[in-house]
Length: 203
Image 1: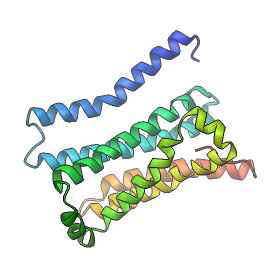
Image 2: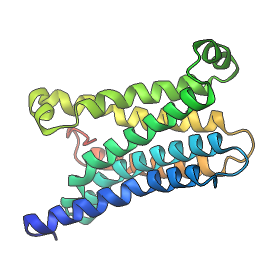
Image 3: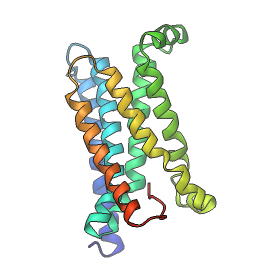
Image 4: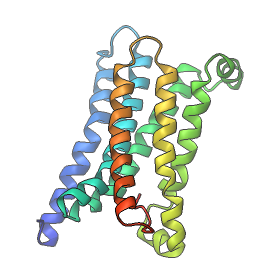
């Protein structure tokens, strides 16, 4: 169990730096031309993978609390959610900026051929209100509505999976792994809800 403000602050800094590390490594690889034959695709997929990973980590914190009885992991939920949004934003920015060169015409031409783009945009739009209302001030202002709003994270997890499945053309191993993880995390929540009928889910 964590004790003391200094110990907690130190742990938060460590977790923050570890969460930022994938970004720094990908940028370093890009600067040093170590992203392979298609660097834009590698950067695009790299940020997308980490967005989904942080989404899974954020969803895992409440089940960890349920299983272990320890509440302190929940205190990282906001940070993990914001990092998921951060990497999702970079994922989208690389696609629009580097892949399409900010061309609206190119975007309109690409969408009919690639419906996974619309699913990705839907996922990103679902994450925006969660990021905007992630502060304690917004949580107090919204009250019980905050819990209802932040259930959108479940929908975002499912739409992110659909986006990934539609994106992959041959090997579905990784999407299936993420689907199993998210399915298990949602399954734990359903089990808890069934045991304590009427209690609101925690996002």
